[in-house]
Amino acid sequence: MRKKIIFSYDGSKFNGLQRQKNTRTVQKTIEEALSKIFEDDIELKASGRTDAGVHAVSQVAHFDIKKDIKGLKHKLNLLLNPDIVVKSVSNVNDDFHARLSVKKKEYVYKINIGPFKSSLNCYYYQPRQKLDFALMKDASKVFLGTHDFNNFISGTNDKTVTTIYEINFVKKFDNKIEVHFIGTGFYRYMIRNLMGALLEVGKYNTSKEDLLKMLDTIEEKSLPTAPPEGLYLYKVWY
Image 1 (cartoon, one colour):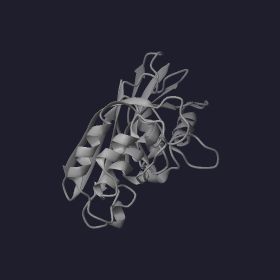
Image 2 (cartoon, rainbow, N blue to C red; image 1 turned 90 degrees about the vertical axis):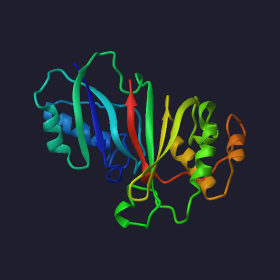
Image 3 (cartoon, rainbow, N blue to C red; image 1 turned 180 degrees about the vertical axis):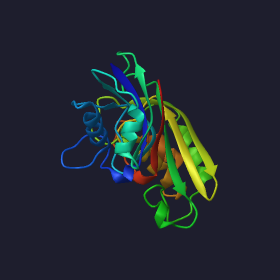
Image 4 (cartoon, one colour; image 1 turned 180 degrees about the horizontal axis):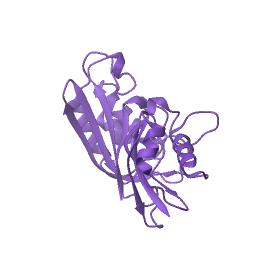
């Protein structure tokens, strides 16, 4: 029997999503809770990894069990709260795969443009200088569509081409800005690298034309990577 689970988590409390030895991760924590409930080894497979410090509003995963238990969502939340909150647990067909069945994803990068607040330090990027959001918004248009994002991906990847459908800048209350990225999929550090590039534009350290030169080119170029604390996996579509 296959179960689909949707959950949120505070990334500042974990060393990333993927299971690792001798450190606290999201996958390891949920697997331990599931194994305790079912008295069996349970493997969790998520829609994708998130790095240390990166949060999730609606991460999706699946796991297989031999028999069902009533009240599973409640039992999990008793074991996992407050750092992980299970939003739903449902039955799915055996051909559902949390990663391979994904149609598109949405990430959000949060920026506090008001006074620095220590309470926000793990949850927002707090720039030390003013940002030109008009320039950033205009420059973000170069990333729309299907491109080879080789220069905006960290590590070695066999595939570096993907499609970005939307990049939206949303002003929230109390001096907060959210940048929403929606695309078919994103590679390691890709959102943080795209955001880092846009922040450099907003600081007048680079230009829209420079970003165009970095796209669809084999020549390796790089710009600073945005910090992880402002990044959230927001939604996954199937």
